[in-house]
Image 1 (cartoon, rainbow, N blue to C red):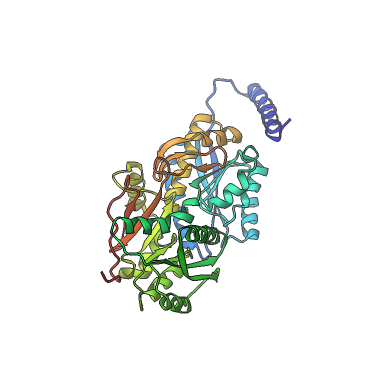
Image 2: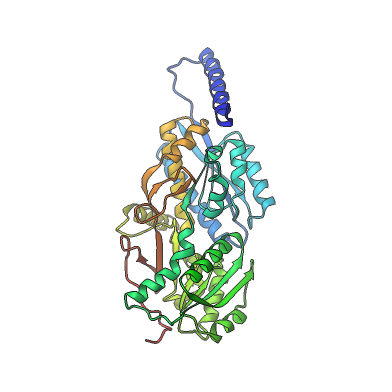
Length: 421
């Protein structure tokens, strides 16, 4: 008998015993008493990613308040249990995961990203706990894809990161083909990364794509992960051989903002692409007008435009509640909780973890990020313009203009103000 079958048999046996005991005390027609279902949230709340962490908590609190105010589900109301994983060190993630998993009233767990490797997925599988995350999908896929049935518990709102590896240089090439940008011959790329699992995966993929498409690397630099205040040594390399495109994959908003502010001290005639960080509201606060013209992209980010009514609805709720716009993770956690609530409405019993996880995996609905359907082979959200698309944004006057894909675009690419035409 498989491990899953054994768990199902044990679950059926336990349910039979519980029903028998209940019949001896209550009439079968008696209404169920209200209960509080606890939801565990693993979040980097006090570390370097605290801006994300605070936003994640807000998204979770908003979803739970809404469902409780509406009367709950099947007599159940919901309570959030927070586990601060700080900077995502394995010891912190493990300690918080085990603490929350030890509470018998916890029946669902989620995270924006608890760690950068997703190793906590194994703990969820061992505990038989339904779990959703929106962290680095390459690591999630590497854990789940070899044996998806063993990870029936776990699903990712984030689609494959493969497009992060390939589509930045392809965007530059497309803009050139449309006459919106001039590229050198050979095309030149300055590639800068941070030494962490998220950035390194994208860095490796970008290097392969650049080589295959005949881009010359004028800068190839990896900096240690953590706080970086001075980028001028790296920027001197950028200035020594001016590239068409400058890419920095350090996702921490403070680091990325420092890089841009120092780049603007003596800007080269180059497009600037920064990975993830510009999506965090803190980034624009730290850069102000200097961020005008900067490009970034998102997979699994909310699409708050009239062309995606669900995305606009969620964004407006978040801003009305908290007075600020949400970045990627506040919206993501809000939507993951609503996926769970949908599953619970179908299953009705929050303690039936396998049925809950199965219902999550069968999701097929419009969400703030696009159209959510999971790939059964990887448990990642499906990517592409008809599912969750890769979105390219350009910042102008503190606003994020969606320039691609055309299906959702709110504006067109414009030449950055520091590039002379």
